[in-house]
Length: 295
Ligand code: GDP
Image 1 (tube, helix red, strand yellow):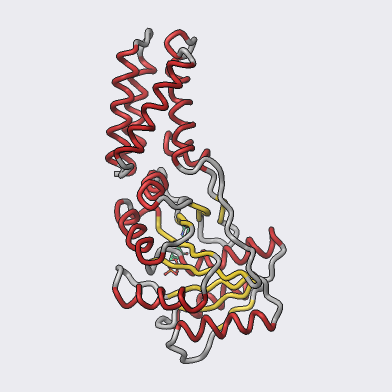
Image 2 (image 1 turned 30 degrees about the horizontal axis):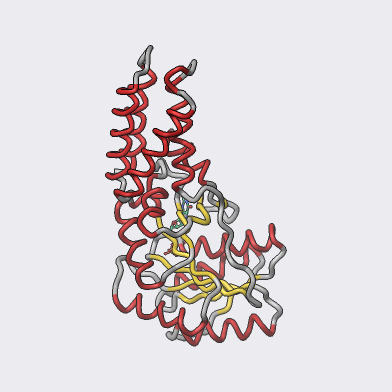
């Protein structure tokens, strides 16, 4: 479906690019196509309508019909509005707490633990922070071990408690240890499951309530298409998270998920994962994502 958004936009533009003389009718048809493509990518009706109306107004205002390269001008207008739709500018995470508490949520396999390591690495190397990681995926020894390996790799403390099955206690203890150890950021990894289930949601809600995070980031695999959108909605309904992390953008996905998720949950995408290495994390830039969606 997301490949579709790009392909369909491309098709709409082909119409314009191929025309030697562009008419108001061509533009109207292209905009109608774009609106349909947006609706099919889960952008809500009102947003899609405003989107096409804005592009139309700008096209008229800039006198696209008489431009030397009208097709290119339309593509640029659509590109810029797509970037606006995805938030316009980058949105930072809240690091004002002392320590700042960041809770990481998402399904198993979404890239949560990897992102926890990447974020710590970024905060350490680029923002001079001293993070402490809490290995809160208490049900999977492999996940705890994975975080410990990552922590060693990036030179960051990982807090664990042998045999502890209580994520609330673990999070609270981790924060206490961070305070004593002069850590200014605590990043709490949490247990994910393969699909949303009630126990997971209750548990993470309990952690949220107990530690009152400065930032809750929801991690989602960009390759999972429509599931990514549905999962984002369910997590947001329960957790009211602050931002989204879109992982695995190094794959061949075109990034339509960014647009759909933003539209459905109305929360900013803050980071994108672009590989398995600890350095493969970028701040989300709506402009670059618009480039990618338009191909
Ligand atoms: P978790 O179960 O949500 O904690 O997921 P993991 O962090 O264990 O990640 C699941 C798999 O996805 C691992 O093999 C990671 O190396 C891989 N992974 C995570 N983020 C990315 C990414 O941005 N790009 C790619 N290609 N792989 C990733």
